[in-house]
Amino acid sequence: MRTIGVIGGSGLYEMEGLTNLERVRVETPFGAPSDEYLVGHLGDAKLAFLPRHGRGHRVAPHEINFRANIHGMKQLGVEWIISVSAVGSMREEIRPGDIVIADQFFDRTKGRPSTFFGDGVVGHVAFADPVCGALAEVLYRAAEGACTEAGAHAHRGGTYVVIEGPQFSTRAESRIYRQLGVDVIGMTNLPEAKLAREAEICYATVALSTDYDCWHETEEAVSVSAVVATLQRNVALARAIVRRAAETLPAKRSCECPSAAEFAVMTDPAAIPPVARERLRLLYGKYWEKA
Image 1 (tube, rainbow, N blue to C red):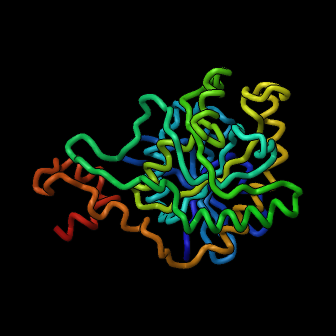
Image 2: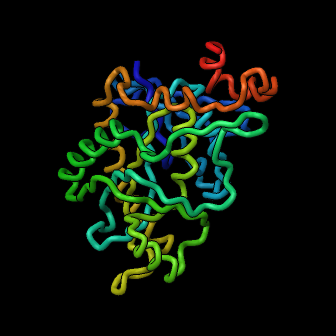
Image 3: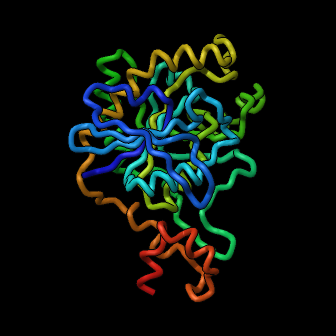
């Protein structure tokens, strides 16, 4: 059975046909995830939902324990992660209410723990293409169909600049990001995508455009009320995309994500501290056993 993780708002799991729902509390070597996982079945797929900010939206972007969230997904056997994220548009043609299946990230976060490595273990994974192309293609096809029915528009590809937050950008920052060629702006997809790659989980983003940030000359600057209003309208659209993708994903992965960390660890296995070996056993133990 294919197992799909969904990270986003708490309303995403309210979809027809989702059965056998149960809340699962997971403990990780990296602390507690944002909340309990809500696990259920949709046809022949198993879905694990996690509210990124916790139920009641109580965890700020810079406070999210991304390592625990991804490690918890790994414990549950998740092979694909669909990230559903609110973003601001940095392009006139990406209107509020549109969907962007981003394929690149630009990191402007500050000091967030962004790797499972360290503390006695040195490792590097490739991140030139930060999303799984196979999953992104499935999501784009799902978004295209769902958007056609909803009267919205789906955009294939785009660069998502991830800022630290929790404040929105200044006008100067917003204009500079536009000059750099980014397409959308948000606060949550890094280091989430980096950690998913290290954990060998396919990862891709469904970015929900809610506003024009603050660069637009004729639109109001981004505000919490505007973001929430657009998000509420887009919840049903996001659910439809997740549902279509879950029904379409294959039983077996054929991309490079499942072996992304095969040659990542640079540290001599004999030199890895026992506590680090135990901490990373779920992620890399299969490779150490071969050594």
